[in-house]
Image (cartoon, helix red, strand yellow):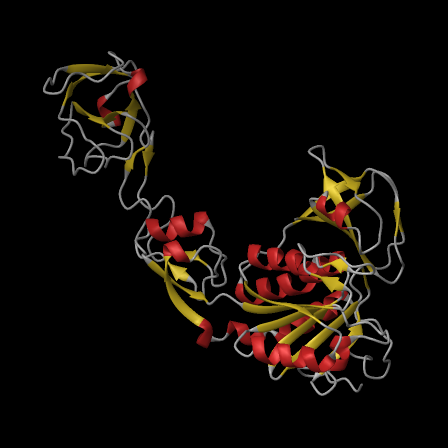
Length: 420
């Protein structure tokens, strides 16, 4: 077929050299460009904080008030004027207590007020003496206002100053921030009940292949159970995408086209698995013959064959058919593209570990191995290089990256890993 790039032009040299392998970085950039429309203002919605977990903030957010909004006590103790207590300590007359949530009366010279954690510091007070340092070291009964012996204390001791967390007018969260529990808690602390976020991304996920059958059904000879659909649906759902499964498509190109048009007319993205290599019966390639879809090879192992373009105007990604290749393709291309455009899902943070055994890697490919990062920082490789090893993948907690150009790594060498 004649391939057409979905946006702009292919990387330099691609059109002139059909067998040129695109780099991982080039293909990730192409996927990001393909999905750029997902960051449009038309996809913004306002949600209550309770419904915004895992979404990304559309606009940067400036604090409408300071946190804390007033100076408050860090401890249960006595609010004091530090100047009232000499180095040897002093006995001060006790004023009415200051519970959290109340507005206290000003503290007069020579007096102290019992104060609870989080309560407003009275005007005139500049420090708090913890209750355990007082004599007696417990609060007196309500209604009794005697005196208490307190040690000298420096100004500011156990006082949370107003704005010590964030001051009014400061940027609280940047645009594109992925909203986790901490970020939503901050918005709530700043008085926000709802927030502008990008709509979740809807994906039509289709597994292809006459050799694939649904789990739970009988397994005829020569057939295999579909693991790609469950694997990718779980990965996408965990990343915050809204996944629509369309079942398993046969190797009939016309039937696949009909399925995509019926099930995918209102989704943001179509993802297929299988049928993108150069074999004789690659149904996805055949079904996309009249669409602006590019089928190419990425210099990556596993997951080299990739499809990218649009189907009836809807962004389309074609992942390879082997299960490990599917997951690696999602982690290397789709997840990072969404993170870059929308801020969600949160990007995988790179960590480093040391190999427990040596490995080899093809010189011109970025190899992605599966492994287990141990508490001592060592990385055990799970299984081999093959892209069908689901048991090895299930026993792994990291993807291990071996960049292009690196052909050998010895035991103890450092590698970059992404936690799964």
